[in-house]
Amino acid sequence: MTMDKLTIRTEHMDGQVIVYVSGEFDLEVAGQVRSAVEPLIELADRRLTLNLQDLKYIDSTGIGILISIVKARHARRAPFDVEHVPAHIKKLFDMTGITQFLTKSESSI
Image 1: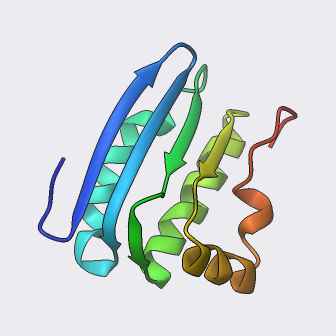
Image 2: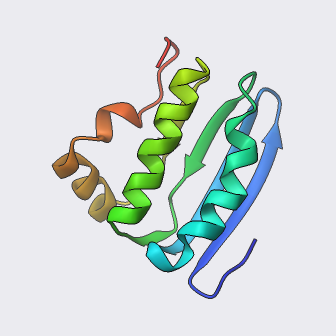
């Protein structure tokens, strides 16, 4: 799915779905991101991973969506993590305290 500011690409692998998010993740694209990710949240038998390597910007709306994904996956006892977070985005995650909920772990969430 491509929007002017954001691109979302999904890759299904054995036991895992990787969502590649590129560009700017903000209020303007929040609805489209939700539409793309919500069906994947239901796949409790697969690890859901967001790859943010090419993410340039995220605002509080984007962070809120990440938190809602964490909560929904936790409720389903389904693994969720974020990988390849750019340094400037990781700094924001650290400041908001959500980093601990977005890291890979083989144990339950």
